[in-house]
Image: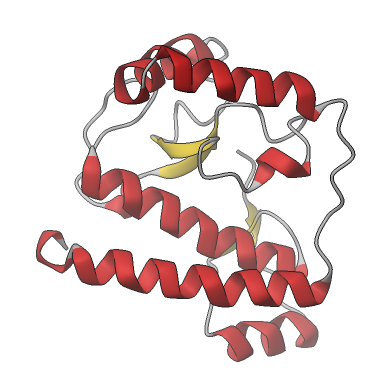
Length: 167
């Protein structure tokens, strides 16, 4: 995953303050970037609380912050329908989440998804990825992003509360 240095303009700063989300980096700009930051935290916490390991190589994490949110169906060509799909994104170590360093990681990623969820579940995800290329899923509007941010913030808060003792 390519991380870009945080560059905030007045609009981004206003959005950050409005939603109380202050990313240390931006994968995407604007409100999409804020949603990604929140979504990434949710996925990394979810997997840390349940598994504490990288989905690809099995490396153990000391904290959820040691992980990154890595896509099974690659973010660059999975389409918007899978970009923010919780089934498609899991906690990975930085090495496995970098295709330059781990070009073959999808083999072990898939094997570990099968171990976690079963072959049938992974085949459904594979089918969704194959079909995603043919589907025209529109990106959310600003209002839809705002609504999704509020829903995800509630979901993240509940996840943290449920797992407070592991923090």
